[in-house]
Length: 542
Image (cartoon, rainbow, N blue to C red; front, side, top):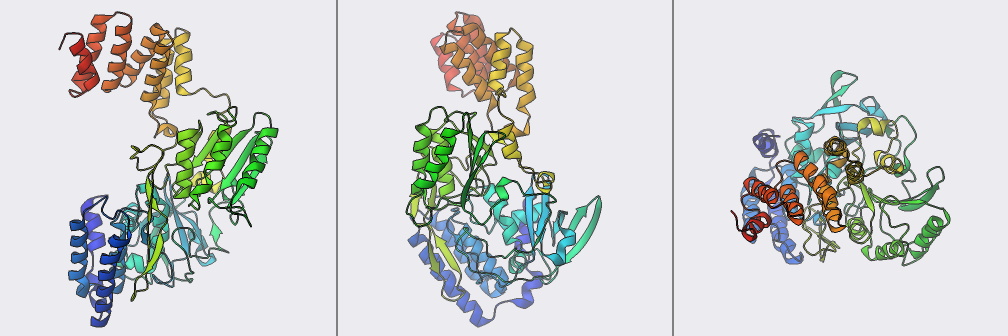
């Protein structure tokens, strides 16, 4: 989406001019703005880690100057945007009745193949399952991007998770300039090759909510686009923690929608003990931990299951231990993912997480006196296991995006990928096997076929093959290592690192001239590539 169009949408105010705040309301909002401007930085442990105090003051001053020209809904959006300015997903405006008392009775979802109406009330059942092309004045993508300006987030996946919620609020769409009349939301949808415009009116009533842990919209009785039984990840929605044994695949499946203690207990050890007892008594069982809907809880409860996994080396294997993550893996759920990724050999499957690896959290509510908006403000920093980890999200080893067809038919690509993985060779295994058989062409073909696969979108196959080359080199299989690393240079010819690694292997067997050529090519690709520069210096050449 073009920046100019986004700006036009969120800066648009022509039809709002007649709805500008009264002098009394303007004074009330100005008072709230000053309270927020003072208290949020004072209460947050590191308010300017992603910006500066001067930028914050400038943003506040900009809103203050424009208050007389703003409507109530535009002012609401400006306050949400100011809180999101912190770049801390836990520091956010609580979604409750202070925002609105109505919502558009439909649920959108950003699938891999576009935005669709996933659910709606019975009055709007005809649009369920339709692909959404436009939301009011904007395309679906533009509307999601506009919503992203008011959602406190640390990466795009959290925006994908929560844009549908915020785009269901009439006052928000009005404040963002996405509608000309919030009583009539036009949606351009496509279904079975036919494009229609459907108008949706607000209805319903907001309920109380706390942060992002619950959604204040009652969807009971709504119609779903799914035309089959729900998959495991959507079953028992009222239970935050449950598990089941799948005998056909000898899989123990654990659904953890939150990190919570067991009923009438301060811990959840008893529940985990039952799960591991089941794993221990089911020969060769997989353990699948589904954290894709885990919005958080008590991170202190995460250590025990990780300890139990580490006590079971036979379970702690990439082909037996799997973790499903996604855009709603957040807070204590993200911390659980961090520990599993750092300390176990689990294979991560699904989508990237909705939060960065190190995070601020343990938010506490702060109410604004006039608007009665509740701002949740972080109070504590949670460090990732690696203090140098600056990733915006934890990425899955196997990316298994959900398409509209998958959802409609009740398929779960993440669990399907796990259950079909038994006995499947990894890319590195396939390359190693082909090289051992003397089939260099087959090794290169195996790597090329996999490099463009959707499931490897977040996987560094170049790094995997490089690691294989070094493993063979360390084991004394130098000739095979050279072949593997040479294959890597052909598949990734613009990577300085692949040629640097090949140079090191060639030098190990005395093939000095070839090693120099490889190092020189690495420097041609990246004149600052220090490892190759140093190698050439040691060899006495430039």
